[in-house]
Length: 478
Picture (cartoon, one colour):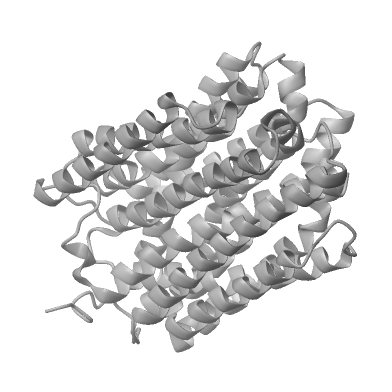
């Protein structure tokens, strides 16, 4: 890489770091925020859900806007919006203001997510994109790790408001650097799919509400109806997307086998694996009676291993392609989940450390290589749209995984206890612990199944050959 390319990677890493730092830091501060703003659990939960929803709904369209008006320009705008949203979050006088401010943050995060991959595709040839994505993954894992450490320190000794204020100096510096060094090489004509975005947003909102309401009320007409409505709208969304000339999900672009299977592998891995992290966090806080900070620190080895290995794994994918490396990564994540499965009431905590480290290896193997395979096989001129599709499918998976986690926890033990466990205000004892472990084990088996599907899809993508220029015509289904 030359000097300018290194600066561009550093800027993209800062954007990724901000987003990942904010995700883990908010989870750690969850109980403190709920108590400080005198909000109920189900209301406070939307601090997380609103961010995931907005990012999942808007990412593809914001990637398309980047294609039209300039990817670097939209990425820089995302930095600015995220920074302003962080300021509003920290100044929030009540829970409603905080939820709305998180929505503003999410728009900025979606702009950065949707356009970062496209900027990599614009800046680097296909034979070195894996290396670039490896460094971006390093930004993600480093941010998540910093979020764990800073979240515990800031929340405990300073105040939850400052978990948002910490983004402001990073955002200002990154925005200045972005406007100076990021330039747009090309723009293309593209049309927005606002109807599709509204249908997708409605479907995900109804489905998310159903999961949260089930966790609150148990099986009831409201959540069953909401779930059914959500899936009906989702089917309408799919039908509409196949007929519109400018869909959110461009099925014609997905005729490329490598592209199609790589994106679906991302979706199923996100759907399966993120719930593992939430469930193990609940296990450590609720059953092992650890503080949120101590529980998070036990998961730190995964982020450390991921940070150290992601650039290396990205370089390997440049050399050998993504098929073997990414598929092996899913197998490693299944091994990590199986280690978590043996954790019981009195299991030595070092087993959690081992599982965390193994999971870090798996994510480092999968994400840089899989993401580089997507962008290496994206049609030239639609990098922003394809990057947006990748991020949208990943974020829908993350949202679904989060809903799965809270639904399983509420179904396994009394709901009032589940809420307190989730936000870290109590721990379980006796027979309730055993019941909760059985519920966690059932959810972990579901996660293993979903990760296994991701692995199968990863292998089914087939072999790829990367040159110094895009070759989108390769690997087309006929």
